[in-house]
Image 1 (cartoon, rainbow, N blue to C red):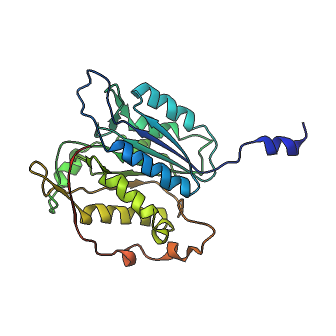
Image 2 (image 1 turned 180 degrees about the vertical axis):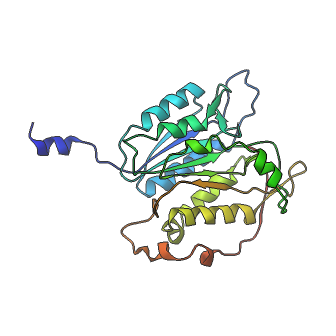
Image 3 (image 1 turned 60 degrees about the vertical axis):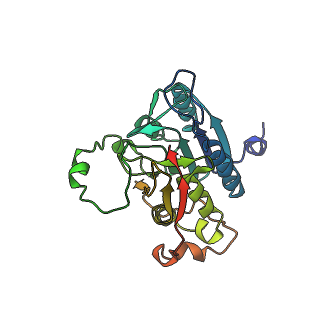
Length: 273
């Protein structure tokens, strides 16, 4: 076969996104349904597709199916950036499959430490609780809590990888029937051309600001509670995974703090993710 024909027959590499969303758990599993998960998945698919990502949605997978999926995905070609989104119930260090069994995030992260993903940007968005504590939105001395926190799964994150959690260690993440505040806010940022052109860590800073300062849970049980996303990064360079390369990228050079705008606090009747 002529070399040129072989090259033409290869699928063109592109940025890829894999969204794993668990909205309904298997019969007998003591975890409640997550009615907003499907809304999040649809909005992610729409927004990421517009930005040139090839997006694959996977719903209600078991823990073993999730492990198998990411073992395969970690060895598939990608242009510049691979984005993974997990949306499920969870606790520190894991999310739950539809069978109620834990999926260890450290095992997922480690699978991307390979030659195929070398020098590619890997971004993980984790919409899941990391504990049962609720954020009252006040400053506290958390030094003792931090010293007792296990950092073992952080060490499994490969180079050139960023992990954005919906909430801080030990805390719950909120969702209601219209979706999660974390992923819905992420999508709203992507819809704004001036913000989607930002460098990744600046965009994640903007995401943290929007969630922390414009969301407040409503209702008798969770009224007044807040949410604070948490970014873990091992990036070694600036990356612009959502920028429109056809446009002038001046927006990406604007300081993240200089573009922070005041927003009216939104209130929602929420449940824990």
